[in-house]
View (cartoon, rainbow over the protein chains, first blue to last red):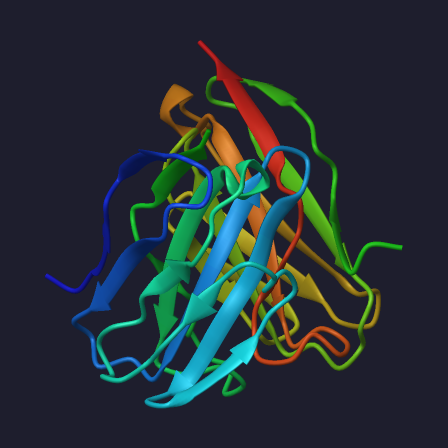
Length: 116
Length: 113
């Protein structure tokens, strides 16, 4: 089954304790992206990757890191989480952007992160 | 001005009626347009994509695109209680937004039995 897999689904952590949210896709997509979703603010892009070893900042990159060492994986790293990073996080992938057609994003199931 | 705008709702629709959702965008160069459905606490799910002016139908859903007026709409015919969700409009490209879909804030739809 074609899918984007995120783990964990739920995570409660303490301020300052490094964590990683994993994201893996099995569709050989080139493009992958991380979003956070907060009430009243909608979906905001954190980082994206156009291909292996190619990453760039989105709208709200502060406090996050990413890497793309393999095409299928795009982990999100919070080096020192803070309470304002409490949010619902989504990983998404796409064959590519900019070519029109039916390419949208396929989203992972989400990670609800709480930082206390 | 927001880049992609949607009425937040809620849009209350009787079961069996047509739900009409609208989305406007600010950049004339936008080429690709998407509608996603998101149930509370779940991930967005792609419903429709459209990139040519006019209508595109898929089952009970019809997307309408008017690039001259810079709006895209979604019609849900024969609305069912299971259609109660938030519907997100997404546009590519959008201004200087770079390589991403730009999402509207979503319209919450409530279908009442």
